[in-house]
Structures are given as C-alpha cells and as structure tokens.
Length: 134
Image (cartoon, rainbow, N blue to C red; front, side):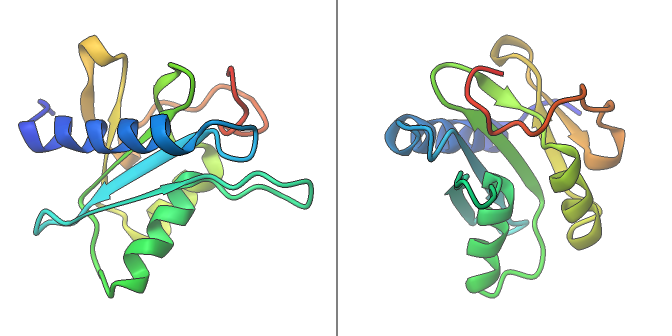
C-alpha cells in the first residue's frame, strides 16, 4: 500500500520520540500508533534486567488508557539512526490478537511501505528488536 502524508507524519512522530527519549540502554525504540480518527499515541520500550517491554506494547497500553478501541497504523523507530523496524514476533502476535487489521509501516526511509500486519515477512531470528545496534 502506498504511503500517505498521515503515514509519514506517524513515522516523524515516532522518530521525534526516539530522538528525544531513547538516549540510553533503558529506552532504545519508540513506537507511534494512529487511530482511524487520526489520534496518535507514542511510547518507548522499557529494558530492565527483569525483562523487557517493547515500545509497541507500551504504546498499545497508552492508547488503551484513553479508551481507544481500534488502531489503524503502527510504526517502530530505533534509536541512534536505526530507522524503521518491524515489530518483533511477540509484538506481532499481540497486535494480531488485539488489532488484526492494523497496518504496519516498514522499510528504509527512502522506500517506506504500508503493509497489513499479516503480510509482514518473517522476522530474522534474534532475541528482540529492542537491542540497540541490531
């Protein structure tokens, strides 16, 4: 699906949060989600020795606290210039269970695409996407 201005703005929103809040090993990715009405919610991952919570999950929780029943689009942006990242397998499953029709922004900045969650290619094997530098 072709990117629209609102999709590019969502990438910019996640990127701004990543630049502002992802400055340590505690926070390494930011996510932004948009509702069908155009409301945007953002969040960052939380890394800790007891376990990590991805930015997507934090952002879903933020939207839920505002009573948002449906989300239309999500994007994840990494710190330190890692750009747009696909959701990890765990987050894909949560998104599929909670928002099965959600679209995901993926690809390099010069060739971003909007894909249905179910059309994402399999994620390369790795522990999670929150580790800086991956």
